[in-house]
Image (cartoon, rainbow, N blue to C red; front, side, top):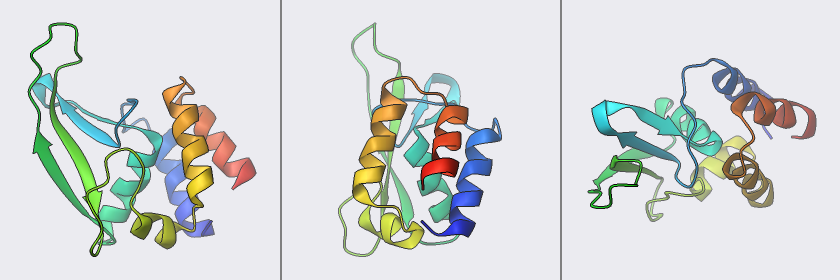
Length: 126
């Protein structure tokens, strides 16, 4: 993984700026609250430097027990389809993150590891 991008990602995960979620890279909830998975934070960094574009899809929740997601966000680069669960290939190539490592991190995130734990794992293993 690119050391400069890795450092930015670790800093972002530990910053307290992002609220964690599972299952999607990024979503907006009732009241405008944004939530990200750990890989969504990486995509945010990529979007800020123009590697990918962020797009949103309105989503309505008709079940009272859902988490009131109002918008799902995806990222696209080049001719790729919009990515919602794992980063698009453009982000993986830019960052040097292997798809298998990305899947491992998604699993850690979705199984309840907090951002600080994930950041420490990235620091030691990527």
